Image (tube, rainbow, N blue to C red; front, side, top):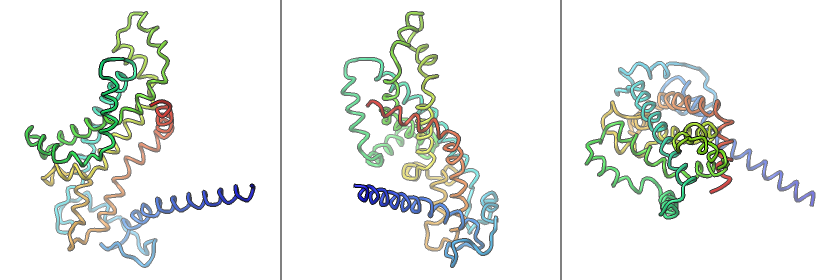
Length: 282
């Protein structure tokens, strides 16, 4: 029995080490490549023989980079604007929707939840053509608001985690507030929201990360170079056979990870708490 347990523990640690190496090695390789001299990603050694910050400097000087116009700061600002607006609007939609289905019983509630659950099982890119035609009709193609609408509306499909969290908040708190004369909006804004900091953090981070990293919808909707996001712009740097901007791409990718890393580092406690609390009930 003891031998069997030791073997299971050994293979568990072996699997964790393998997953850790598979996760960390590509990130370290990209970081090391961003400091290499020259344009090629190939090197005899993992750690560069000579370090340079030239690629990071080139990102902020868009003229004459690899023979292409690379408005990296503009792409960064576009991505930050779209991700932040999507996070604010998407979080509000998710919280309000989850609160409504958690606290109120109305006709068609179960049908609505089942429909959202089924729709959430389909990959988002299945609706690409329909969304494209819809945005053309609204004359929103090649605008940041097109992506903000898509990301914010799509975030509502993830309401089940927030609903599970709201189900854990005692209804007696709301009933006491209602007896004191508070209306539903006051109950939601002054009692429920202050108690929901972990789930708000979780939803905000997930929505922000999804909008920040998306390439498929951004590549479909944004056509002009000045409207591109970071994912589309950086891919364009290395998508041709004649491209020689691989180390510049690595430097841009490292800077892309900075906001996400900072957000996860400062909100890790709330993130884990929100995820586990929301998983108590479905």
